[in-house]
Image 1: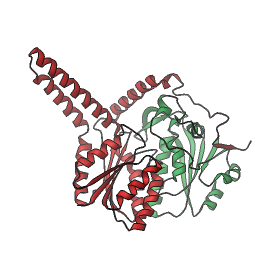
Image 2: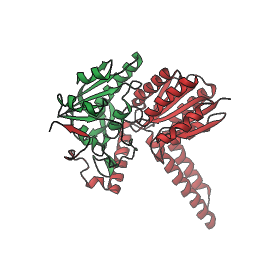
Image 3: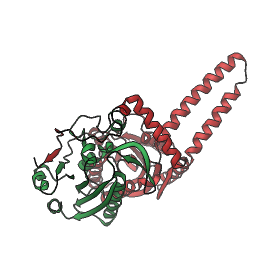
Image 4: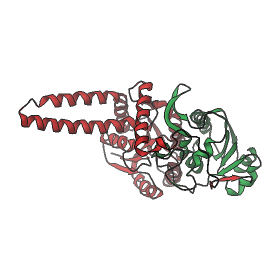
Length: 162
Length: 255
């Protein structure tokens, strides 16, 4: 199952569906994660908040290939995309293990194929390096075997890269 | 002396480690201090107003998915514009903490904050990244419980005419043991406070709770088992690979 998460606007969903099984538009109209861990401890793999992101972790977890299209924000994801990722930690379990020599949570959905990030917008050299590091860390955290990052000048170009 | 603005960036209402670390940092800072909690969009404006006559700002940030929590990003964007428009040249320090044992896992967050400073023309002054920060919560609860037990013990022994120094000694030893676990954090917090008071560059330093990682993992697992039993999650498919419901509204599909 290939999923695209993007912050390009809902009108891009149709175009992006040509290259994926599922498309999720992160429009930022969601509450941020409250750090309660109830997606681990009370109702596994479901957020305490019953809005549109209630089952976001299940969407991410069941994606063998995940493509994230995001505007660069200080070398990280845009707020709407980050919101969705923060609300998806239920795709792991509360138990901990070692991956790449460091502590991480065990994976509810097991290892997956590839995390691909397409970042658009003006970006400095330092921000590039931060983003590369962050995507590498995300891939380990989320259990992706491979990862890659592509930088694009603008949203239009980024949408065409998926 | 310059005013220092301290911002707790945890979305948690209560018992946040970031809030605790913010208060600890505040205790060691000289001069005027103003404390804020950034949780909702309504919190942003008062913080920006507080920055107007400040010289330093200390962000205390929990690590969420390898970076800053999402609710902090719109604030950083607003602060960037605000600082540029008002020509603010604040010195920025960051105290990051995460639930994993390795302090170095905070590195991407620290870089994001440094990049934010570059874009906002603010002066990045470094900070510390703490691993196993959640143990500080456990420690402060344990210290409170041990202190309460000591007071009770002293009272009861006093009534019976027994030696009241024994429970005090016992509490002292427990306190030292708990402080020893946090000795790296305490040392780096003091070092950071010295730099903050001088306004100098603290660089980036990483520290952690002084426990071997496999023991920390056992503690963390035990903690989540207990909470999951109490909240019932352990009986609701704790490790199940749930699929999204058919009506999951965020998904657009070809069908």
